[in-house]
Length: 110
Image (cartoon, rainbow, N blue to C red; front, side, top):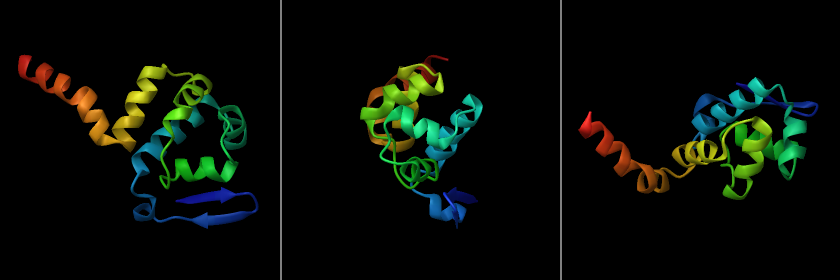
């Protein structure tokens, strides 16, 4: 996978993307669907830099919870859905504590 940071190009192997690779792929797909450039989204959500945002999309860092609302707003998704998906990708223990028991009850009832 190749990511461009300004004029420089950095190639990241899929294994290098861990531990948050799936979250980064998901975020990139939301941004692509919204037809927003990385620079535009970085400005809209108050990211420290475009490189920082690209590192999130590369799976090298998680989205801070303080940015969930801004990301959701600018990517056109429901904040609670965005937050739940971020927790699933970036903080699985919190996600399981909040949603795991409900999912288990639903699957037992089905």
